[in-house]
Length: 301
Figure (cartoon, rainbow, N blue to C red):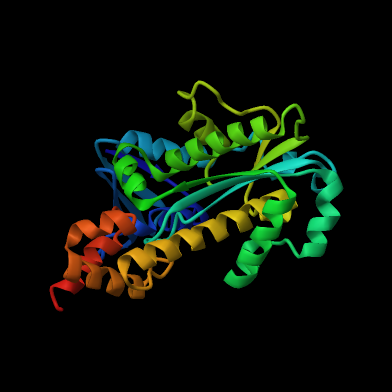
């Protein structure tokens, strides 16, 4: 057992982080309770967080570390970063029950920045799916990139052995390795990863890898606001996710929605009803709480 005290802002981040592992009926006076990889995390309104289970100390340490200052925070980006030749790296699909997990790294040389601005490259969250797919096609014709598309079956094979954070870290590192090889001998001025965890945690997650990309690597939340390379990577990743989701929908014989809402639960329940529980391993991220919700719904069909 391990107890730490955290500010409310961090507690809200924790709740979002564990959103797919939340228990339906948390204890009295608690903000939330989640069960993640054998560890129960209970956050109270007082700010105290109780970690219980086989990885309690390790999980608590991650959140204590999150409070420490970043050696490479957004404030440490070089001057005029937005005008440099940069590799941006982003991922899509981590919060969607159906579909794959996609990581994309994209290289935008400084001389192509104006071209991308004229195309309308921006934060993919501000674009329609149709526009994303149009832009992705144009970007693939103009800039070097590398995509890793992890289908649900592969994701479900790997997930029990590592956290989603570690999985994403390894995928980003792998994508960067391949993209740097593609553009060699040219080198970017910098690499910007859209931040999903603390840099120290990221590097710990890839420390066992024979090749670890660390030179001129920076991390920033909302990375697309700091350089178009991250926006480009996000657009290509999102388009790949949509294409894969469409293919999986054809295989499933029904439209598989993105996200992790109640509509998703209903579609998953129908799949279980017609094909059995094992079908979810092919189409969904099985460890999400949606699986148990779908199982419950299926009993009413």
